[in-house]
Length: 177
Image (cartoon, rainbow, N blue to C red; front, side, top):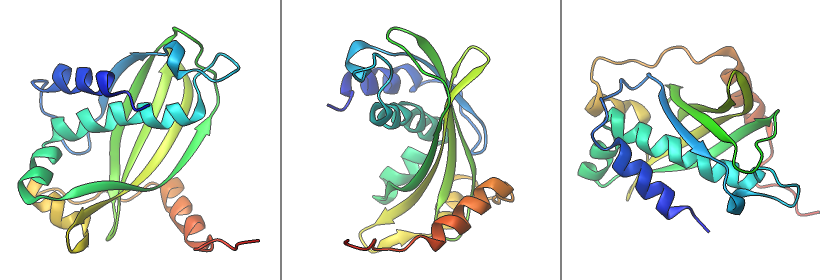
């Protein structure tokens, strides 16, 4: 089940937090609860993806993005991701979640997130999201102009560009073997 109580807590907690620039990092702290676990008593990989929402939504609030989306009746949807798992997060362990926008292109905005146990990165994700309206996908530059007119996308890091290129080679729809 979606962590609605935790989501509400994060929303309330950060509703009056200092504003963030679009490219600044939002940092939050969380705990791995029993309902987040897999049979090996560690943070479930699927739950990890859900918990990343608890970083992206407050980040969007603090940058002013949610206000722009509501005002224009726009949405945002995840259009792809790449996740790297390197360290287990066990039951009751506390972790830091870091979220930041790394840039955008003509179709998508790219957000990098990571979970940390002290100085050790447990996992890292790159999320590609699309802004949507009743008419379809909205170019990120249009959304950003309303949010921060003077902001241009920084050059996407080489590793992000490589992922975009590799993902572009992936057949869609996949074969039905």
